[in-house]
Length: 154
Ligand SMILES: [Zn+2]
Image (cartoon, rainbow, N blue to C red; front, side, top):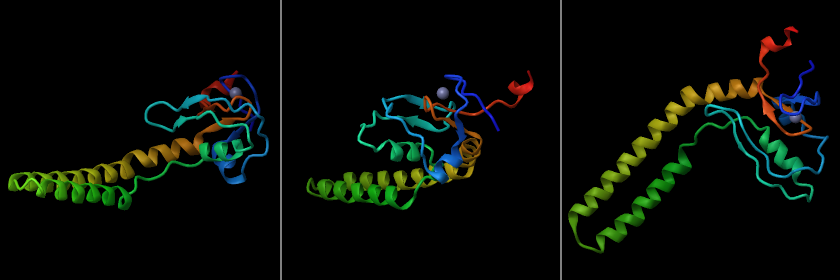
């Protein structure tokens, strides 16, 4: 399957999932920051300017990694931690209504995160995985793209 990079016309491209699974062998030292992204909430790839100390392989592998689900445990624990800190701070003031407001904020944040994460995991994440499975990586310019099926007709 030959696919040409829409950015630099190189045919040295590889399926993103294959890049992730096999690891990268053809890495050159051109790892200056390239801001890449795949449109509408897709793989937002903020390519950091990787140092030229041979960590580019890891960077590329990370870049080719499939999208993650939104986690529950760690964010909810952080929210709870913020609640505890705020509760302690507020209780020192001795104003009961503030404690109630802090509790309300904690419940709101917990429910809100849980709802948003569930929505993301149920709707957005499968789309991103599907897009990731169709994506290709250009080994020359590191551009990530989704090939359009109808352009091969000429
Ligand atoms: Zn390219």
